[in-house]
Image (cartoon, rainbow, N blue to C red; front, top):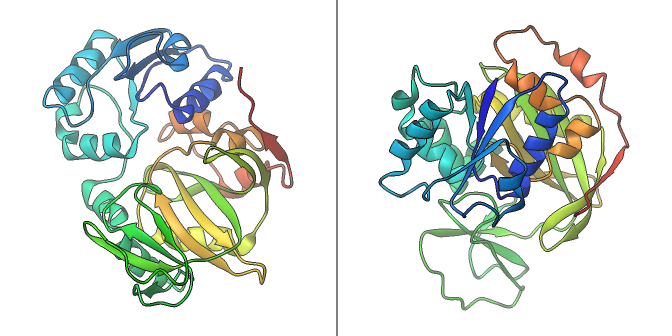
Amino acid sequence: MNILISSIGTATSVGFLKLIRMISEKHYVVGIDLNDFGYTAGSQLVDKFEKIPLYNDESYIEKLLHIIDKHKIDIFIPIHDFEVKKISEEIERFEGNCRIIIPTTDVLNEIQDKEVCTRNISELGITCPRKVDLGYNDKKIVREKISVGSRGIQILEYNEHEHNLEGDVFVQEFIKGDEYTVDILNDLKGNPLIIVPRKRLEVKAGVATKVEIIKDEKMINDCKKILSKFKIPGFCNVQFIKTKSGENYFIELNPRFGGFSISSSLSSINMVELFLKLGNIDNNYEENMSKVKWNSIVTRYYE
């Protein structure tokens, strides 16, 4: 299989690539990035590297289609949120060229509007941080209404009432607790094939470097409820904060492979191998979940 991975300079893409290399069947991998060859480690780990402009460049789609045709790509995996959105908006141009497993533009729009997404998930009976105003006399978080991941988040102390809020933002109460990310692989209809929660044990420069795989049934069931609302084929991840009292608060839904999602595969089954076979094999959720090595500790190292 000829596989194309975008943003090959990111740790997310390198993790995805490592899981491809663990598959017994040999695959040819092309990596693309806006940096020159050699300026990212990922560019030297793929079979072939191609430079491409930023997702919002007017030539991006044309150059991407050229690379897909040149290397006879079978499946393209866009890694960055903005790339996923751009591809979804132009998805008809890729039909007949290669396979791309991403949500529809409507679903992505609903996910990227953080205020709407949080409200919809709250209506499913899942606990979310309350929306408050700047006068809220406790620690609070200011979030961009339309954003991806944790971009644009500001944390204000309890007595910070006067603040220059730029752009379209909203404010939520600050929730203190342990951070969890739940890695999920769905089938082509958005039904879960495996759901693996992991607790952050160590973070360096904002990136998780040590996690524990935790069997939290409440968190897993909350993810099932979310997936009943948002149909996301392929990979996604959900972020929660668990308080000392044991309450899970929904924080974020990301329609992509996560930055340290490789840890969930290393402690269960190779999710990338399953992903590449979606639609071609029958897969059983219960069987996949039975292979998770709960309470495993996974650490990241750099070389």
